[in-house]
Image (cartoon, rainbow, N blue to C red; front, side):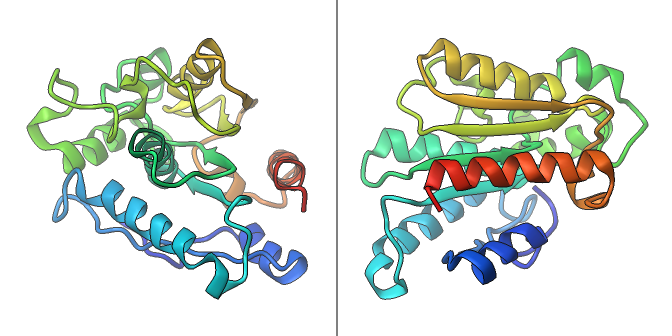
Length: 227
């Protein structure tokens, strides 16, 4: 929520452009706390809608668009997909959520297990959500758009891929989100990688677990988009 730019893409996404002719857009959304909620998600929504509206100019099929993000970007991808569903002006084929930040309440078992340890711990999570939501964080006045785990109805979403490490603060909220999609009748593929920490895909792409996670993700993209 607080740092990063549009160039912070995983190498695998660039490989898709080079090897498969994929058209790639990356949104540089405004960052918190200078731009709190709803600034970031509205930026992502505007970027996606602008991208979809230019399908003919950019040479891609608007019916085969995947919205993807990792960490805060994963949470914003989930939130943007909910906005697309509710505003009903555009649609996407699928969403891919890599270790996404989904719940500002930070009150799951895993959020309490990983305090003071790891690349993104309980305290980091609190800081990120506070930057986005201010004093509202964790309280009753937060909607499900900035915090998708608060949504009571996850019906009408496109096929969703979620993955997360077992050794990270976001583990349980990701599992809960996949479960809520299934409960709403939706399609979700969930992977919890044993021993994986937050961002292990990028930090250790050549480790056994990193290679396995990236391979499974790439296979899902190929299957869901029929590349």
